[in-house]
Image 1: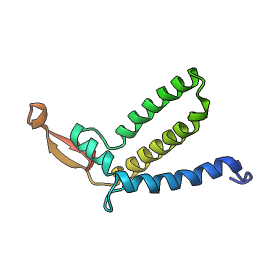
Image 2: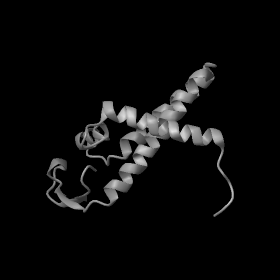
Image 3: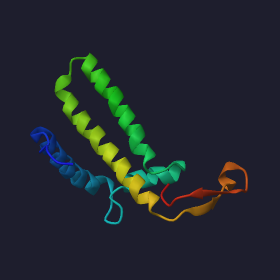
Image 4: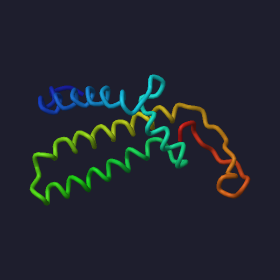
Length: 122
């Protein structure tokens, strides 16, 4: 694939996402797990880590529609950035978790005793 240089504003926004991730992971994560907040939610709900940021992204989409309907377009860019960041977090966790070995977990919490396959952090 050859050709394009990419859109300059897109590339600036992509660099801003990197900065946003580094800043936010300091508040949400810890030195061992920059996604600690997502990991905790996954462990408490029994869902894969990548699912929580997907659900948060849906919430942000609904907020965008509401802000647009109210004419508050000056607030949209922040929400767009949050959605992009959440989706990249989900993709990173999906990649990371898919490389981990599958562990068998008992289903006893669901009332039966058959093992089920689960990935760590999922």
